[in-house]
Length: 280
Image (cartoon, rainbow, N blue to C red; front, side, top):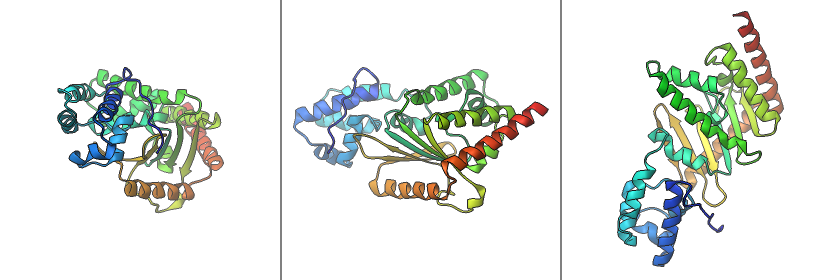
């Protein structure tokens, strides 16, 4: 088993909890499996908490305080952890994404959040929140752009996106916004920062007709799969379920255009949008 990643306890409440949980468990002479038994979770799940790839829930914190006699430490800090800038259904996935080594994503309708431009993200949030105050939309956009800072590192994480052709054809924000958004994708791909493919309409039915899929792999913890639908999301860590979704992603890649052909299609659609914008 790989040695656990050293966390900076000052970096976030989640990192603090992970580092302290590992310290307290070791001090108590318990293995990850032994600590997981009273909570009805696996040893690998305890490892994910310790490595910072999973978020500790309040009921788990209560059990840890009881088992490890930590005088409410985990409950107090779990409350701080719940103050997330992300929606409840996405918070744990976003935190895992921030420490992932590899992110693979299939997007059926929208450009993935990590790859969005500011005008595109604003159009997405305004479309979903048509009566919201501008300040709320501003806050949502700022958080999304902050997530995109993951790409400021030239190599890590490895990001591989498969976009349904519908993502290119749906004119979110209008032709000018789409031209800029697609050109941003082209820049990221041509600078070798991401791998990108397009699943064309001509591929017909495929393995992910039901919705979006995000796979995250880590250097020191089992892989996770995240499934999202309208206002809800599910983070999966069961190895069999994750393996099934990894196969789904492999089938999407096999049905998609090659990276070179994908860039050619995106460039063509971007040019069409740019020309349309000039005519307005």
